Length: 586
Image (cartoon, rainbow, N blue to C red; front, side, top):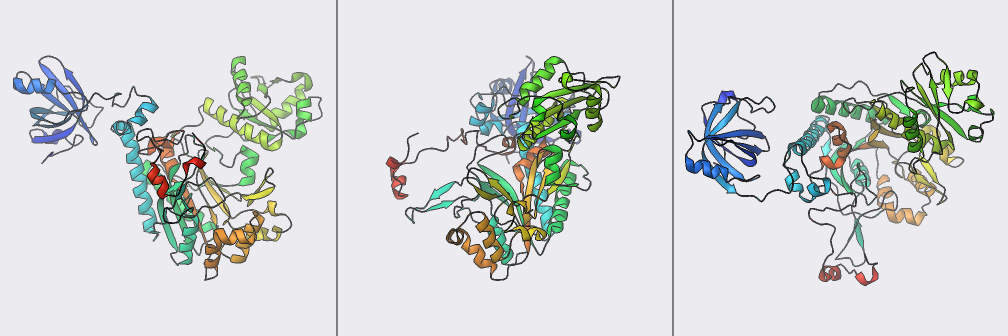
């Protein structure tokens, strides 16, 4: 056999045993008469020892010739270490080597394969197969594995059935851009890779599979960032004969299960917040509720005092940063520069300090009396030592900017602890959002989301006011899951397509198969999908989902390890009926 034990397995109880280990040489320490090798595999590290007083000269010479990342087999006797290492599980023992066999030599790696490496992101992605040997990266994938296993355990325990849906489907005009795949056998026609299995899981409900799930790859051709990849994984779920409350209860149980089993964290009942309250109090439909700093609207207190910025603004709104009155002028200037960034979009920032004696000093004192400023402090529940930060402008833009400022202050004040988890449900989203440029409505979630029954009377008169039977799960300011109760009636689905600007012919061409299915006894149904990569990064305390994907793409959507995407041959292009002469260069 190649090995009797792994490199993370041996303990004091094994002392005296003859064993065989295999793995990679992490490092070699040669002290002249003594030589130690750290041998690593997926399970851990075991120290190998060779002593010139005991070990044969030929074996010592062989050991000294080993390089980093050589793959070796070591045979020897387990002994107790004189100098123990409490930082590793095998730190009480070492292997006194009697034989070494080199299974495969290795070139010197381009970066250190250790917890703290000298390799930058680009270099490690080019040699990802080496980066995956590092303990932190391996632990990330082990966490992903545990989360996948516990997901299946929970859903299987509730009689969900895992069903695979197709990857080669039809392109749809709604949502993000599709990745398309040319068909060789159907000239000029294309498949699309699924952005989600939405219509298929609804068809499974029509088929009588009342509890479905799938841990599924999805694809979106969109601009990338830390929490996006062109291919990503969803926990996709659907249930029949349910209302919103059934979905929320089932998947609240799911997230509690994951936290308990994977993180050993007990999560209480998830609070619920309406979309309207989330936007009013946090300026975001995915609020980070680990800390307070809720928005307070100040229009009645600040207008008509001669300060044009406030007088002309649609909305004046502020937050209270506890304990930040001691901020220096330099720190305040940094905040002003922060809100003026193009991606934030504010034109300036007004601040006020609440001094230790309770008096308030602001950056616009000449326009407001001490009594006026005291009213600001009262409205924001500001105490001595607190800092008030105020933005003004158009309502939507100002709320968005203040949300970014709130998160920045939360980070600066140490309020966004990655070991603290604050999940909640956001409910009662608008069904539609108006696109000013296109002069049409878009579905806020997707076209199959059901309106709230009590708002159906608005479908002709005021469709923009209709609330959706939709819900998102948010944890620490990250949307980790979202879903809705679906439309299951052909007439209502047709009305929805009409509101979204589809002609009858377009709706039939794109989704006729689904509407036809509704005529054969579709049950009431609804579901949810969780971003599995995001959940993994959240549980692991990372800002990037790439850390939890074995072979991720970079910010340009490229796999730099295998150099993809890449050109294909003229013969392949001919088979696919694609003429590159008609395509733009570069």
